[in-house]
Amino acid sequence: MRPYSLLTLLALVLLAQPAIAVVPGTGTRMESFGDDFEDVEWKFVHNFPKSSKEIDERVRNPTGYSMNGKWGEGLKRGQPDIIERVPTPPGGLAGSKGALMMRSLVTGQPGRTSWKMQQDDLIIKSGNMGHLPVSMTPNAVVRVYMPPFEQWENATGSSFGIRASVIAEGPSRDKPRRGLFSRRRRSRGTEIETYYPGFFIQFNSETDRRYEEDSAVMIIRGDSYGRDFNGPMITQTGWWTFGMSFTPDGRVHYYASPGVDDLTAEDHIGTHRPQGVKVLKFKTVFFNVVNRDNGRDWSTQWIVDDPQLFVIRGLQQARRSSNYYRR
Image 1 (cartoon, one colour):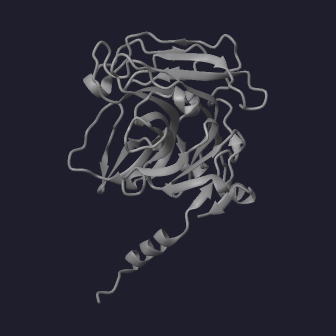
Image 2 (cartoon, rainbow, N blue to C red):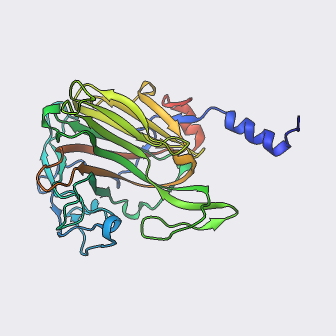
Image 3 (cartoon, rainbow, N blue to C red):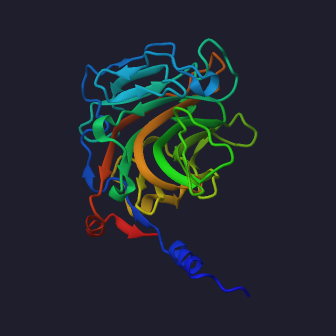
């Protein structure tokens, strides 16, 4: 049997170490990030037609933005058709009077129906925060309101996304591409690229013969081998809390729980290096609204409240927290 080199043995030992997981909502809140929607004058300026760079390489300026400067249209796919402040649905965060509703009809290329699943993006602007290194353990939390199943778009497939934009390092590929949403540079067999880990909420319609009744499931994108994997089944609609944390070992930790209570270690769903890459920096959070883009069926109406971002300024602070543990 061929002996392992010292470096190989060291790598195996490091890979065998348990991942350091931090429950989202831990540390110091970044006050400049996110929104509570309590301003009754909250408004989004759409500037239609929206961008559809992913489909036709068109960025249609000027792009959409919120009047408070905290939200912007996604250039890759455009913003949802309806973005407005609404009264907080029952059971929301204590004291909350307003939340954000998103809904879309035309999710593909403006003026053209694709007759397949397409999505729009609404992005939280990070302002002057910059890109946060994972040495600060950035972690994000948001509350999401899921309407009763009979009010969802009646089609099996993804309906909503809760995702992050991160800078990560992975193996270089044969054909590096450069673009607004995917900038790569090669260095000693690796490349730096933007990745988008997070949750998709998939609806399973009772009109689909595979399912006996309406239901939903979380799809996590993705695991260490680049595969999407199933999270918990969603049998309870209403408010849910979602969170992701990004730790110095380059991993992403996914959490979700029904209700609006703070997340705990018991709400952990999975830990991975998404698509096998090592996360280096956190950029922001964004939401996807998805429908069939058939020109007649609106997407499900999605409502979010109080997206927040936290950082931990040092490992000792994390260890002192009850939200620090090993997986």
